[in-house]
Length: 71
Image (tube, rainbow, N blue to C red; front, top):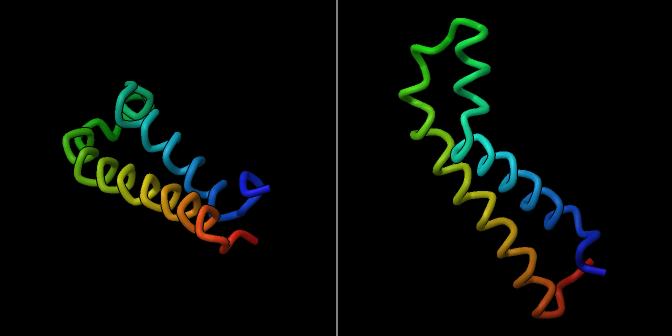
């Protein structure tokens, strides 16, 4: 089954984590609690590309499965 592929799992887990950190204030609260709130303005430069990369990994895993390259 293609959902057990490590590439697919990596893509889904990374996408979910990046989406949670981008669209909810999880990192804002954590950075504020630790005293690193000065870096909150730079999170978009890291998290949005990470979201696209992990989404691409997920898409590649699905494409690989659809074309007969599943593990």
